[in-house]
Image (cartoon, rainbow, N blue to C red):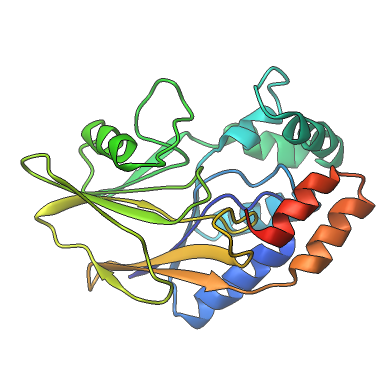
Length: 246
């Protein structure tokens, strides 16, 4: 089975469409969405409708902090993110809102755990952004493999039975074996708002038969999305960040 793993779409329809097309071309047979479907970008309703359609066909989706912030006006965010979220609330219809609020925080699938941030339960939105955070996250779960987003930065960490941690910086399109003598945590990057200096969309494919993961970068029309953000009245800094990929 080939599982496409996508996180942090952030209301970027063009990036999502590009990644979905790429995943289909890579013979992905299952789709898992790891949260943050809204926020920042210009297409919240369209993106949520696409995720709803995919889940109706058997895809898995979990909640992200921006998805929960649709209902929770006290969610702590940067000022630009709060402006974007206030705009987003006005764009979403009641069915889309209900869908976001119905999403689980985590989903266990065989030996795999899907979450937006970290398996740790408190606080809810922990960034797995270095080796120490990855080790704590792995120690908080018994899953063989954990998949998450939230940081917008692709990464892979493995831990042995004796607690030794190894970390990898994925190279796009290069498969990485996931031997079972280690447990693994993969941060799959961001579909809709890259932050590693490459503005292209990021996602990953897990091949369960080969026990390997491949991170992919997919080009899309970044400028068209940035222009749509400005036309919607979203903060110019968010459009600038999208163009730079950081």
